[in-house]
Image (cartoon, rainbow, N blue to C red; front, side):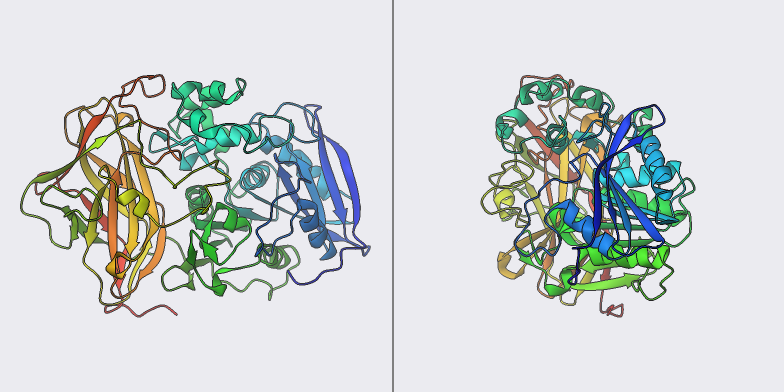
Length: 563
């Protein structure tokens, strides 16, 4: 954000606002220097509305939330920043998701009538605060929303494809008290390896965490998650800006909300950059060890201001992007689109091998023609030695000395990963949309996980870059039987990536990505098992069991390259 003088911003701290049930909620209010009528922006967080964050050196975002709020106030907005119920200075008990619609509506109603307010109001936030903004808008009229990576049941809280995500236990630790929990105090590796899975909160030392309740409702369609079913306003009509990153853990949730608001009509926008979860909030040009170029960096505060200036101040010049703006990695340029997903053709690539697809030097291939012979690839899944999600993983705030990496060679050198590589492309080839895997697989155990990921292989195997992944737990699929090949449909996270000439696509199949997902012990009692045994897992391909990947793939020999 350009230099802004915040010295004359007026602040009021720990203002008490009564919720409809009598609980006092705490907000801080930041007032513009100049008198007059101003729009109001509301945000509510469980992480303490004045906490000090660690800031990457290249970040353009303010270091402390109150710095951001002062900047917004100096630009002419009244900012109301609150602690959600039971967190920070707010009274009551924190129960994730349960009170955010009603409490948010009460804060919105109160804030709209503040002295100096012109009656126009927007909500904003990231992560849980993004969910809180959407929840408030579902229960009270809001004129505009700007949301970064909101939580959503559609992405699977606390699971994806039936496999439990351990980052949610980490999150429960962060919000387990009045203030944010100490990130590195718990011994995460031993906690995430503890058994049974349903008792990990005990190993963490937070017996009151809602972990077992969440695990009792792994189906995202379970009515238990009804409080998460919110969109952009009661009729999804409030203009909504949704922002996420290609490797952001909240990408699936963002896309689920995008489907809701975009299908309802109205003026909405989606921005997806080449960022991980931290980069979505504070973009930098290097993510996962890959330099995406200076154009990949945007100022989130300028983006937020342009959106609200357009919708709360009727400034027609303040919002220029198309309804959808995505960063195409590989090409390393932004692409403006009228909609997402884009209605384009799908190309099928078929899995094939001579029975030895193990490791990246195996014989697994992706071919444009279906294989005429039946074959299978096998590997041994050892729960005591799972495939790591990241090398030297620490906590979900720190992934080791090298940080988060998109390079996958640490995993594809293992015999318990199967790799299927396509032929190199000779023209720029765009993958844009949702890759879908139809996988025929079997196990001799009573349960198994199937993790699939898509990679860009550079010429000469000098580098690989992870693009997307998908997961399914066999035991969550009604058709599953031990010892019998079963067909699974696995939708990956969305992709916008252009393969350059000489590059190739690779599909990787394995049965663990620890500790992003819990270790599957192979027992029918997924949540309660304590003993683990090795299992033999198999991936089948051929006319009878045609494992394949469906790709929204566009070769520039047949399409004009987008600017």
